[in-house]
Image (tube, rainbow, N blue to C red; front, side):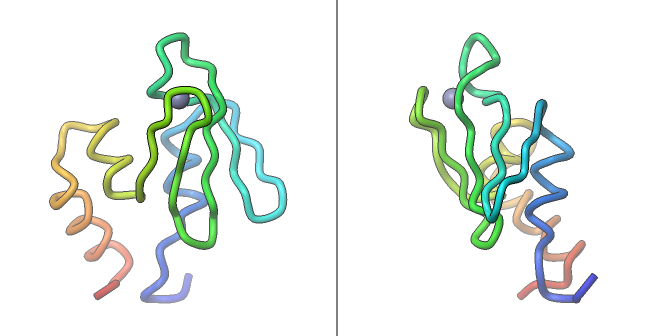
Length: 86
Ligand SMILES: [Zn+2]
């Protein structure tokens, strides 16, 4: 792993179900759609996510803050330390 680069693919994959990687896009069940299905997409190069059904979108820190009990600032700080990103 290269320092200074967040591994978006594994960070999202670890928190999602039914992950499919195709080209530069990750697709999975959306954790924000009520029925647990949905069309959740991640651009692996930028780390930004969006869902075509519930219209949630954002970056990895926002995603972590919505799925775990942390704020987006705390999530961002954790990622910075883990990947040595500044
Ligand atoms: Zn959704």
